[in-house]
Image (cartoon, rainbow, N blue to C red; front, side, top):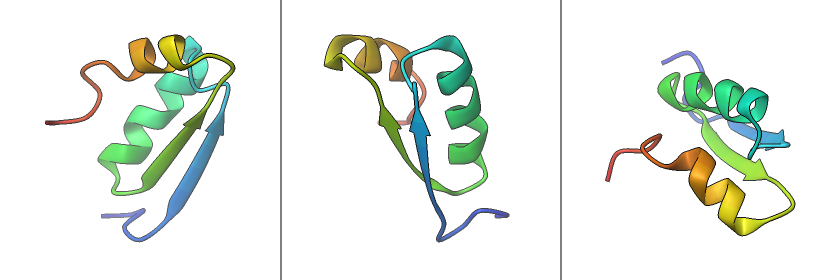
Length: 52
């Protein structure tokens, strides 16, 4: 994987652009941290993004 063992921090992660950037990063193997103003919007943005 291209980003294996890499870390990405996505500011504005609850918005459509931030979530849109985070998903391919995770698929490429990066460990992704989303940053946003409210926990609820971050949870909504990540719903279904990560396998359980």
